[in-house]
Image 1 (cartoon, one colour):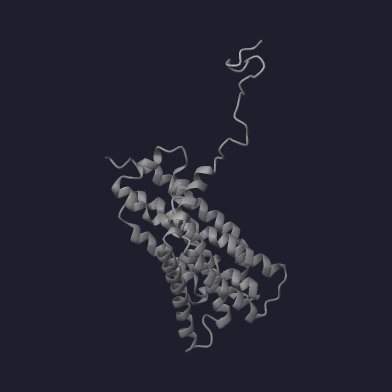
Image 2 (cartoon, one colour):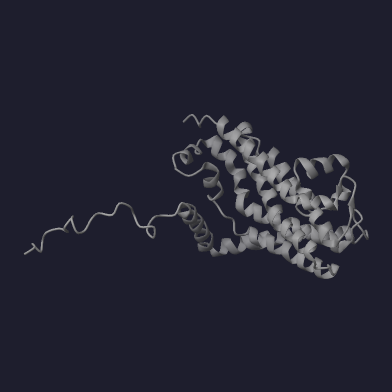
Length: 290
């Protein structure tokens, strides 16, 4: 008779060679845990959270007010009427707000470098960039994206767009690839911080300046700006060129409408440059010295 107090028979109850899949932690679990904690922390302070939401919404409304003031004095801007410019404004705001929510906090990398606290992230088994991106999630940016989305919907209704495959594909490319381009600018700016350390304002001038420029028709830009924000920092691909495709307008100059179909190529090149700068910065970094 077997002893009741004895342990399991190793011959009949072998120890499993591996942990079952249903209890194995996912590789994405640490990121999800961090993001959930960021969301809970923001929602736990309700008064502050609501204030942030209102402030983000007002910022978008005020920028839209600038367009309204301009068109109270002119009929067209860069050859486009009010509805067309509102569409550009809305597409740019949706894409940038989503990118800002995803990676906007990367502009704080310079503070981590100066304080020497970035070294702590090197001790963790996750990629450095993934840790930084998932270290924060500013939900108030969604209100800014909502303001842009409302502008897009209103502009599309007013313009009476011919909803064929061209318009649907151009809209999808703008929202998806446009967000990717804006996000790549944040990553590229963060990579440059490893060399500049105190140059956050210089890189923010390009990132946020490019966002503001993309809200305007590129046809009003002088040729140097068309080169800078059309090809070097391709924010013209985020809203202006897709808007031309959606509305069936030809564009002109160095930024004709057909260039909008190369939006995925522009996004891929922007990310290639961003990751090159990021890897160069990470390789350049020698630690905080603490």
